[in-house]
Amino acid sequence: MSNVTEFILLGLTQNPELQRLFFVVCLLTYVTTLAGNTLISVTIFASPALGSPMYFFLSCLSIVEGFYSSSIAPKMIFDLISEKGTISFSGCLAQLFAEHFFAAAEIILLVAMAYDRYVAICKPLHYATVMNHPVCGFLVGAAVVLGFIHGGIQIVVMVQLPFCGPNIIDHFMCDLMPLLELACTDTHTLGPLVAANSGALCSLTFAVLVASYVVILSSLRGHSSQGRHKALSTCASHVTVIILFFVPCSYLYLRPVTSLPTDKAVTVFCTLVTPLLNPLIYTLRNEEVRRVMQKLWASSRP
Image (cartoon, rainbow, N blue to C red; front, side):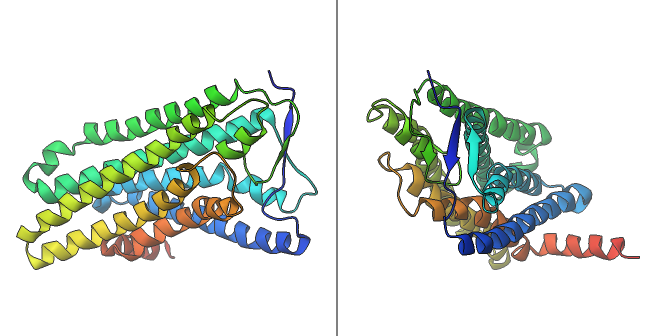
């Protein structure tokens, strides 16, 4: 049973000058993140030329990125200009669920994108048959369901923990590590199990993705130089996004239950920087997406 009705979030910093600076930087970054991911989704959905499964997954990834960032960034930005950052107990659990729901869904989508590239490069003659619309829909649905299950596990564990006194979180959001430290019970056994839920998801998925791209790259030896270049360009974008996502994820969850001073900076990177970079990575390295964007921009001008 919990006696705590709200938590106090200390935020990014207690320095007023830095708070104002971070407010401007974070707000601009968040708005740009939403605009970039929305632009990619709209471009793909509006253009028949980008109707392949790869772009369908990319549009879904952009939508998830926007929601993931929105589950954390608005509260963080608002608290930078408010006198006291507080969040209700139920609001804290809702943020925890949303964060892990969208993060897990993104992980499954990255796996689906790797599988799509594997079939396209290693089984090109079977691509249209294997990656049909029902299969793509199933993979996206699996991302939603597994994300819901992963987020639900965090909530089921947290609602059973007693929070009886300290309610100050030295962070700008509710997450596993800070909440476990505030629980009025021994979490030495529970903590690693809860962290392993996220840590195992990161590490196992990262290992599967690395193995899949090793297989893909090894199969390119039999392709033409033009085919290798195109495949490498596409895979390079995917691998870059995977590294940007899984390295911070592994740092945050593949360790003992304790908060570190660098956690805030790493979480800001996951929340704002990675969702901002992903649209840039995919569009700047993809000539087809850039060409479609230019056509849509030209057609929209009077």
